[in-house]
Length: 224
Length: 79
Image 1 (tube, rainbow over the protein chains, first blue to last red):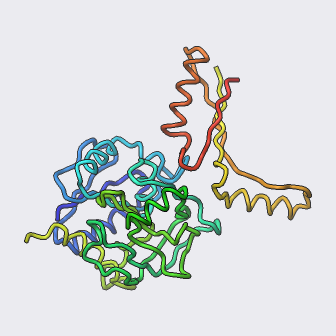
Image 2 (cartoon, rainbow over the protein chains, first blue to last red):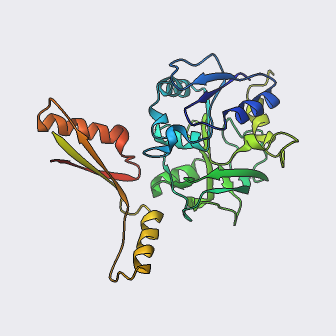
Image 3 (tube, helix red, strand yellow):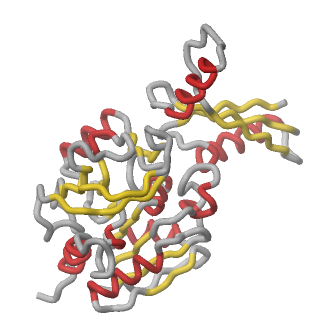
């Protein structure tokens, strides 16, 4: 699987993401800068976590209008896989590639801890090779992760099996509706999630539970 | 020409920051506050346009960047 990671001013998880992708896919991801206007020939584009543009105006709002985003949008429209983690999820909602918005955490505090994730849907190209209903450990680190959308949108997400990840019962760190941790678009080729699976892939880290997610993505591009 | 754009959360969207401010005001002893909603104000100076075309531009600015219309409403005032 060929991948690219887009770095914005204020991104801080781009190296973690590149490390995770290289570790699992065996190929070094291409580094793309926010001011670039073209993407290299890849299978997966990742918008990493951080505080792009200082989270000014709204988290992800300025990044969603960065020069590279036209190319990201065109790539997604052609069916390319786009993953947004944390700040990347916020960018995808701000760019209109995913519905809803990520609001201030209900308790108003920044949360930086481990949560238990439930793989709620495998009906998309990212989690297809994961075990539906299984729970796994994953860190979160965000201030604006409280997923909000109107009732019709939530119903469409639920009915369309588009909620890829939920916080396991009782571990919701931010007040997100229906414990939503990650969602996909209708076509299943754009996924946004608040937790950081890229930080649980290496034996040096507290857990390697995040590897299954990246292995599942790679599996989508495995040569038959 | 000067314009003031006010962005507020839509009705029905929870505002935890407004709630915290409401609690803070109550703690200071201010009585009779029914609710507090937090928003944003943008003061924008525009040159070389009549009020109508400025208003149209400002609406486009709100739709494209200043407001997230999933959760926010905006109001434009030419001052």
